[in-house]
Amino acid sequence: MGDGETERTLTRPMGAPSVPTGRRRARLLVVHPPRLRRTLRLLDEDVVIGRKPQPGLVLEDATVSRRHVVIRFADQGFSVEELGSRNGTRVNGAPLKAGTLVPLADGDLLRLGDVLLVFEAGLHRVPAPVDPQRGPQIVGEASPTVALRRALTLAAEDPAPALLVGETGTGKEFAARELHRLSGRSGAFVAVNCAALSPQLIEGQLFGHRRGAFTGADDDSPGLFRSAHGGTLLLDEIGELPDALQAKLLRVVQEGEVLPVGASAAVAVDVRIVAATLRPLQRWVDEGRFRLDLYARLSTFEIVLPPLRERRADIPSWLETLHEAWYRERDREPPTIAWDVDGLESILLHPLPDNLRGLGRIVHRGGALGDLPYRAEPLPAPAPTPPPTEATPKPTGRRKRPSRDELLRVLREGGGSVRALARHYACDRRQAYRWLDHYDLRGEIGRGD
Image 1 (cartoon, rainbow, N blue to C red):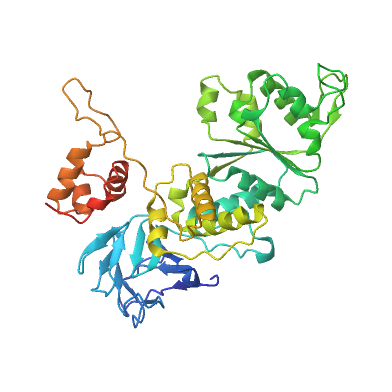
Image 2 (image 1 turned 180 degrees about the vertical axis):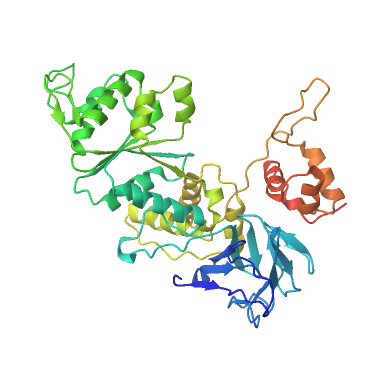
């Protein structure tokens, strides 16, 4: 087991029926305060968490009670029960009353006093140790991050093209740089955004050109492919590459050579190609908007980068990484982050639709304004959705979001309980929280009529 991990051992009385270890397994990732960061592994049994649980899992923090909560195990999964602690417990921002048992879903945020933990359901592999002198580009210990680093390690051992797929801001360039680092290639890492290339000059920019090949070509240019010779070329936003260039890129991938504009002979290049996109390329292939043969070549390794909402436990590590980078880029010594638990909790509960870009804005605001106890600003509430009428077709498949007034009424009728709200709409609590965030109604949690 890795450093900083605690695991409960499953024990039973002699003669009791055996239950396969690992049938149900989960873990709690302690993300705040930084000195307590570690993993608490949960097995098929109830376990008390507190400052001195005797026995149980220990959280040495003055804001945590001796016996703070109990994590209960049942065939349906894990639940958390508040044990009457001094500073209380919150689940996804909602206070938990003493004696109340709340089911835990993957990604739930627990707050015990001033300690923040993220619950992860399912079986998990212990991450391989990381060389602290060559820390990875992809930080964090959430399960999707561990899986992502393993996928990058596997892909790095082969020179075949790789395709990185993910929402905006999920860190595709970080992943590409990690592929390059792990590959050990001696050449440069070169990144280009295909959407930003000039439509008139894109071929010369990628493949190079000879002097006099077109107006303004006063000198020979090697192009981006030859600039990355012996290294890695990241073609970001590959879905924006024009059709005509897709065919020429396919030739480079197949033949390992480029034909500069104005040249009569091709030039061999040794380049590891990494493409990245937020576009649904598989669907675009089906629709004829992207070449099937090029997609097949680029996706020898297709690696999906999960959004931050699926690796919530990594957010503090990313804040630290982006915080340090912001100051280093400005030749300033990064000050120590004065963590504010309320501010960090607000960030961890924020939907962050643009992922690392959203965290980057928080860091920029903190650095520019000196607001180092980082806090996420609430999203503005959009106009309320009108209630459905007879002429409005009922949605199929995905549940329709209720109107703001209806959601507020049901929440208040349930005494401000998110659990009661989810039960009313027959949805899970995370969906209920998304609706509340959509209308900026989190302040109504815990408030009845």
